Image 1 (spheres, one colour):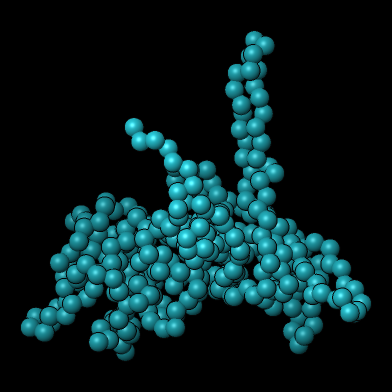
Image 2: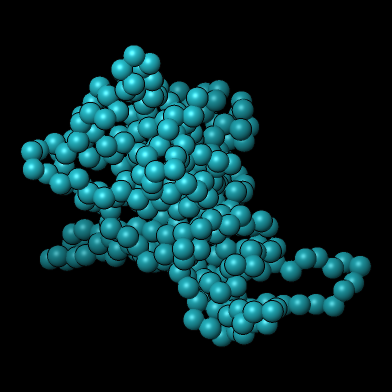
Length: 307
């Protein structure tokens, strides 16, 4: 048995800071949120109540709440107004007391240690189905000691189902444990890319585990007679909030392939490497990564290798 050692170099960890705030609108478009100052996560609904039997303590009955938080910021995106209950009539005219809308949120917290400081790692927090209720606002006359007004909202959420776990609206991506190539792909989805093609594969998940075809046009549905679900292609690198099942599938199935053209046969072989495609739940069907070299052609649904 190895003896425990405390406070080893590099193991004195701490968490600090908040940055990279992103507001995800009802159409799942991401908008940068500048000016975030804090997010205070609330665990007040988590409770433990004792249960007694025959005069003895029998067990502790645990009850858990849903993600809730207090968000504070010096400013917010203009698009956020309708999500806190302000209606836009156009031309700079707004009306309050409207029905707020659900939105998504991403923010990053830093993980530091005694060697690398706050550059050691970070956690990306994703929050789904949020309702924001603004706190009271106080505006004061200008003076020598005036400071910017800090706005505040109470956030509540509607959790989503996660197979094998309690429903949740809060997902955390930890850079210390998530492979760097997978994290880079997820961040390119969350924050957007400067260009390139993304292809969203729509599937029903009814096919068995993945197989690796030798050629790009190989494979297909696993059983004879299976029907291939439709696909939806988009050419936008706009930031969006991936669903929880999509994140799980990406991390579980991530097997990046590089398209290697064959000038003799005209076909392209897929080899293990980062860049172009990764496996989906349907054997033989791949989805394009944000760094793919595939580009659109004039015929809808067909792509060419831009090399």
